[in-house]
Amino acid sequence: MMSRNLIILLLFLTCLTIASTTGAAERPQRVKKQAAVPSVTAPTPALNPAAPTILSIIPAQSEPGSKVTIFGSGFGEQSSVYLGSTEIPAKVTDGKQLEFHLPQLEAGLYALYVKRSDGIAGRVYNFTVQALRPVLLSIVPESVSACAQGGEREVAANGKNFSETSSLLFDGAVINSRFVSPEQLVFTAPAASSGIHQITVKNDPETGSLPRTLMIESKPEISQVTIGNEFVNYYELNIHGRNFQQGSAIYVDGQRIGNKGGQEMIEREKLIFIDCTRLVYQRYPYTSSNKDFRVQVINPGDEGSQVVNVTAP
Image 1 (cartoon, rainbow, N blue to C red):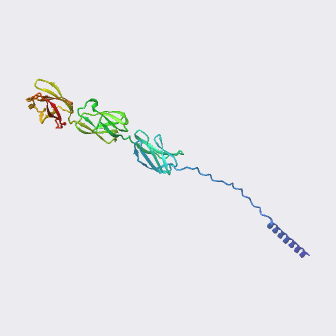
Image 2: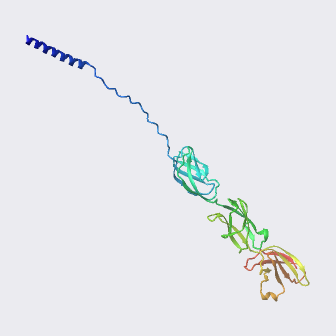
Image 3: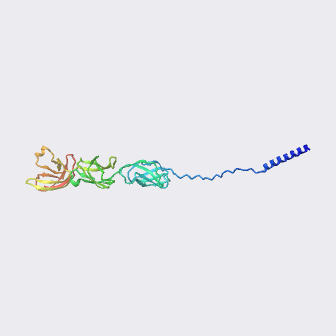
């Protein structure tokens, strides 16, 4: 009886164990839920295009009115060039090339940089604005008589790019001149030796025009011969012209008169120098009848005038 009860107890315990195991296996497992991670979108970085970059400036110095070309990158579709505080519109090509013309600025060293239309500016470079180069086109008149006086010695230098501070040089030396306009300076030809002299104009010590020539003429020239005062046995023949000199002589049909030193003192016929425009020839005629003869003036430097035919006693 006892054995039977023991067997029943063992069967009961076995069934209980099986039921417990089965229930645990069938029970759903509890899963711990993870917190949801919100989706985050990375912000788009702000656009920050590179500043304009200059690789070369051609030329690196120039005068107002000339064209300047800048090569580089980052110029965009539209940029301006600044020289100091002066904004200069520029032509942009492919964002890599700028072209502009220098405005009228005082000569000197300027800070140059490129500023794009979005306001971004590039690095600063030095740029030299040169003084405007004067251009001398003509000298009027081209020749001046050595004995010209007053207004007859006034000469006009014509050209362009002259200023009130321009200097006019005669054979390399600065002489007084008068500013008339950017196209003209006026000066008085100084007393100088005969021959060709050079005229130049400078706006500063480094910027000068090409030279033009001015001729100082000392060659004598006869304009007319007239009969003057008459005396008992001689009369005066007035020789008018220019560039006559103290010591000038005349040839009358090949005979030299004047500038003979002591020999002239023992001769009757004389030549008297009045000024550079007039000589007086004291002529002693053999008869009172008119005759034809030729007259030529010779200066001390052996420069001779044209030969003039004269009809007089």
